[in-house]
Length: 253
Image 1 (tube, helix red, strand yellow):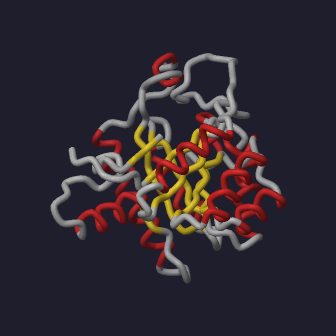
Image 2 (cartoon, helix red, strand yellow):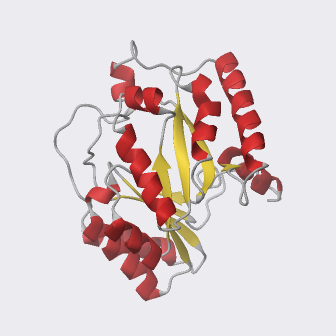
């Protein structure tokens, strides 16, 4: 694998979280930590040292539990003038107007974790109404967002319903699919949550694509599927068999 300059930096701002997802990759552990400023700055300066453009992804745990750290990172990036985009992945349950105004001020792209309609999301993550209220706030403030879904045996058949749900939000612009990784809670609760089979995945994706096709005919801005967009971009990169930064040796966490 060819080693390149980092183009994708992941900053795990905190290990603390306000949810208890049944498939969380973390094992039972009540010792939570927040990333020190000096570690965050070291990672940022390392990623910026090549002068190439790069993306910074803020994650956790639940990163919105640390709003001051989010602003510290974002203000440093903008003050230094680095050629970087900023993104955050959140469960959306504690979004409020001040946080969303901060996202707009620093041009932070927003990703929200949502595992399906109410019954499915409650079973896997919890606090569905709080998450939906977060999506409404983003739309009310004209902030674009993408949704990431962890696909399991329990929710794969509802992917089409998820697309229909997203169609209600004018600023929803993308959907990303992550396959279940059986470690941490997911390994401990294998009697409760399991990966989808290949056939279940095919059927679920078929329903998803049908729903997206129907929705996008009626939307000014289409909801795009990350996996399809990644494959399209990869097809344009000569000499690479990989469609992600990690595969090309460009990711740093």
